[in-house]
Image 1 (cartoon, rainbow, N blue to C red):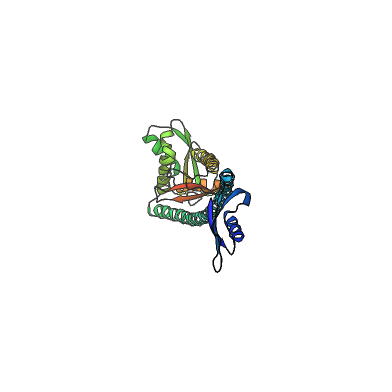
Image 2 (image 1 turned 90 degrees about the vertical axis):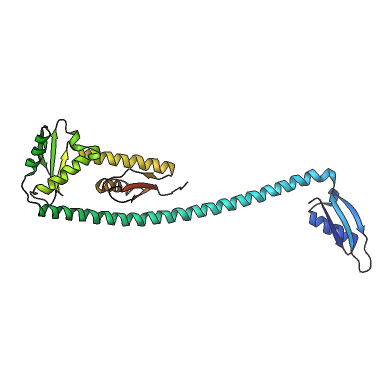
Length: 274
């Protein structure tokens, strides 16, 4: 605002009213009397910023505007931070709730799988020992190997070692898991309720590999603040990663999808959805 018209009961009061509205000092303005007033009539003046003082007031207005803009920006940033904080807390709460539900479902699925395996084993006549089964597989493929039983608290655990056995393991152990399942169907356990086949200690190596992968993934997710999605895995492998990261305060894990394409995701505790 560079000029203003104001009224008052006399000329002096009209000038003061104009100066207050302009927020200017008397030495920086030009005054033009529009009406001196009189009986039942107010005095009226036109007050404008002098040409030699305009630059000073423009700088003053610009500075004032920058302060106001800065305050507005601070308030907007504060609002954004509060929204982001609420969003993150809600996301973490939702993820943790879903994760607990997923873990419950996975445990239920594992129990059901054990139950179904037992049902299959009970319905199929047990004709072979573990050694007879493995020897038959090796013979049909013209391979040689040595099978030994290994101490394990949860299953009758058999380890097969030898040369050129990689094809029996397959991609990420898919062939090994299939052989182990077939062995559990046709062979009777000796002491435990389950039979498990391992080849060249693949299962322990795979577990260590998955734990290392989980650690690297957690580091990456914590650094980038972006989630990471693994390729589909079987329940046992997903569980290894879940357990490897359950005490990591930087990230949280979640399983999604339907079997056999179910996969695992790792989220930062402070999740950025960009």
